[in-house]
Amino acid sequence: MISGLRRSSILVLLCALAMTGCATADAREVASPSPAPSASTSSPTPTGTPAPEPRSAFDGDCTALLGADEASELLGVSVTPSERSGLDWVEPDREATGAITQTLDCSWRGEAVSLTIAVFPDAVAGARFVEGPECGHDSATEFCGAAVRTAGSWTYAELAGTPSTPELAAAVAEVARARVDADGGPISGVLPAATLDCDAVEGVVTGMGYQVQDGYPSDVLPGSSIWQVLADAGTLEYCGWHGSIGLEVIAQAGVGLPSEVQLDGWAPVEVTGADAAWGGDKEMKGLVVVVGQDRLYVRGGSDLDESELVAIAASVLAL
Image (cartoon, rainbow, N blue to C red; front, side, top):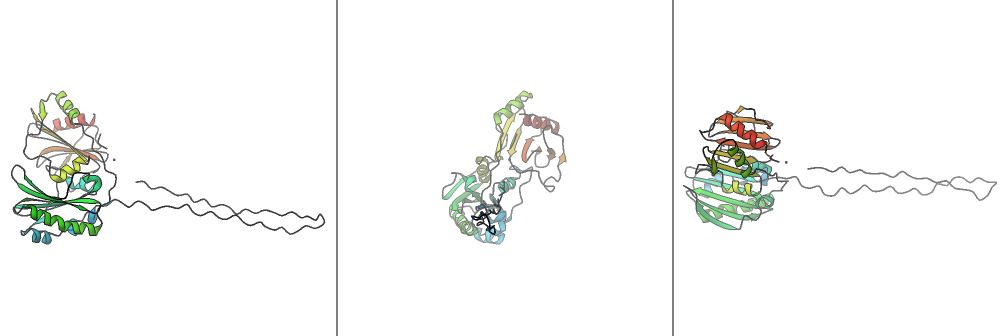
């Protein structure tokens, strides 16, 4: 329920040489045969220029964009590369969606500040960005971000915490701009599409006897600037409810199976309609369900046990 280059072959046809015979005008003499000029051999069909392979900026290497020491010097405080997001994080395995959309997604974290720089191909960024800084705040943190136009892409730098000023965000973005332009920027491939109808899922959930309303009961939800751009490009879909249960369902298109490292602490479970599924209860209770190359996350609070999550997941896959 959640969805997915081809190379053309060229046939080269060679014409055979044709030969003809000659006739004599004198019945008493037989002239030696004189071969006619041979037909010319045809030229191979032009192959054209092959399409470039999709790639992220710097081939996905964040250290080629900005090293931790450079980031610390720019910010004036010590930062180190952030841990990659796990399957049970608020925004599960966001980097996997970045990789299959050729989006470079890099983060660094210090004692009181975090820095994120993302390079979005034009096909992902769409019309979302305009040049310049902007600032705001969520429930507890001030943040400032700045977008700059780069080779085949938009680059966005965001600071959260202290220090976080529009001038600093703009300065970081300008450093990133020069490096992305020198790299040549990303090359987009085909974007996978997540298809998850929240209304249909809600109908399934209420049909199972649960009473729910829109909105998961938490202040911490998927919705970072990076997540939102990827979701607007159609590669992620999020649904959440509260009521007699708290429930989140997230569709993540095209990312395939989790790695063995990511699945540490998760146990295989059987979900009807799934190619594979695992259950876990670390950061939050939930399931990771794989169908083809797509993933579905079904997560709930203490009011749902694993068997209920399995039943909900199977019903969602049956839509």
